[in-house]
Image (cartoon, rainbow, N blue to C red; front, side):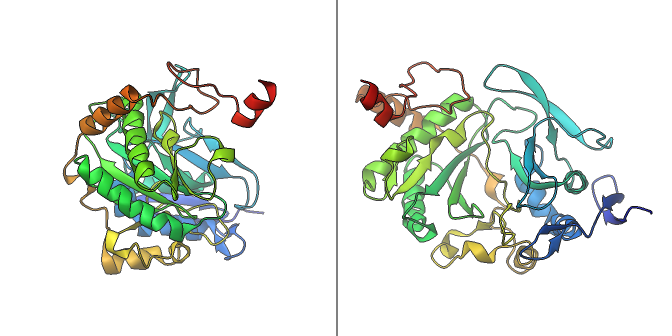
Length: 340
């Protein structure tokens, strides 16, 4: 019996491409009845905005063997059988190893990634032509148990003020779940560790201003019912769902850019692969001018040095990273106390 498949015509800089979508009727989001073909069409519909946010960057693919409720895996190396219009770039991981990662130069490459069962796209904060130096400062506001999206809203507004005082213009998007992601375009003149330190400096300033609502505590047992500023998302090889990327959640939400004046009324559950294409057509892309100009992290790094002099040192790195200079113990505080 012949395998079910269909084809999509996808326009790009080299003209139209005919892309095969096998098993187009395979349901990816069971609760919504949304299929692989629905996902491919969504990517085409938001193509320009998706490409502006995620194109030209090393990308990690979050792929699913069946539905979003089932088995998943992350592809860092490009899947085998990539067409000739899909390229890759070598990037260096924290271990020092180097491997190629997919780069999306046209929306047909993203549709091909969907054909390879990708649901979520995770772009690096740096570009393929300069992978060691981020051109985006990214801050993940992560609600902890006992808090939710509404609690992250005033924190995001204060973070915007903090970044403005540091000379940076910020942009915001929903995470697609309960949190918020704040981005600021920066000159690609500093490597990942410097940008991480800039993020920590901003996070500490935010925590000083909102100590009852914000925490930079790496260990979950110390966070309480506050918004965690996940500074480790600024590390090399640490990514978050890209702008306009679908999420692998039951309601098929999208990590959606919004305007700052929408923040107070935004409901992240309403931004889905069904609704976001029409939103883009009606209101345009809030991030369209993000990279029209770039700021500097120099002032944030001055804050970092100020905090070092005040006795605030390095913060923990993810457990898969090599031990870093000045890093505190990676032992959970309660365990350290019990064995001390």
